Image 1 (tube, rainbow, N blue to C red):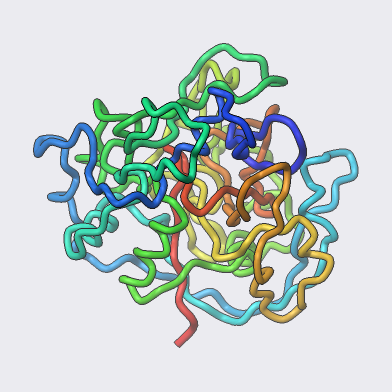
Image 2 (cartoon, one colour; image 1 turned 180 degrees about the vertical axis):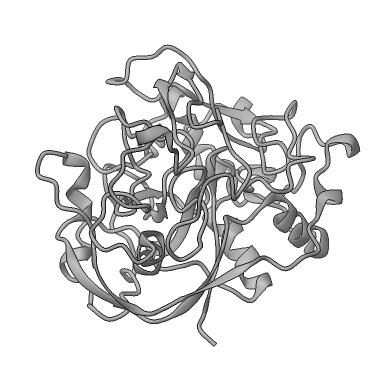
Length: 356
């Protein structure tokens, strides 16, 4: 999940390295901006395009207001980039009620012919240390295994042929899953969809304000109750022994269809867990200390952090891989970052519009 301090990152989104250790492939080979445009493993029987959703996505009007953004927990080093907690005022806007679904993305691709980053041949010039065998269209896929959580995130594999149509590789398919979040989506892919739809990605401030659903300074999008408390589950996260076994106590091991869990106070689904969601902002761990109070737009660019080769974009909300013992990044204040051309089988998005 999140990547804030040196060392392995929660949910295994490793930063690009100056040299090319094999385990880092999932992030630095997540497909570049090459000119070859084709997908591996495609066939008509597994094509999700016929599942294109003709109904317009449901949007929810979120009122403007003021809230306290961030989290201050001195016992948890993972909150360092969520500090200082600061007061923010956000103007009213509209936001998708759910994460963008396979059916909705299929409509976009069907009408535009858009080819996602992971379906393109990576540009070898961007990855000079890469093994040529891995310079194929593909993306990162989570692989359950017994592993040392203190070591590199070896549970991620670069899988040729993994993309939004085939989220876990060419032998998988998004066909028949039109109500699931579309995943294997880069920030660039999300921007392309948003422009086509006449929308945009939310700012971090808008996203957190919406995720809190009117509950100020609460630990979860639904309030104070811990996940599973009283037999109630509010989000699709990871239970069991990470990264070996997802027990699925919340009803799902892996992605869940949208609206599988109760909405928050604004009527929004899956603002916690299920799939990571891209925001418009560059990532800057020090931005909260200098951000304007009124509608903070995010920094003009992102600094290079943790030895990464390029600035990062912000992701929010956590995913089905968020584990309480390892990362716990499905809480509304948690931040994450990744390169704009990276994706994985736990990363999607939702869009917003300015209020009418």
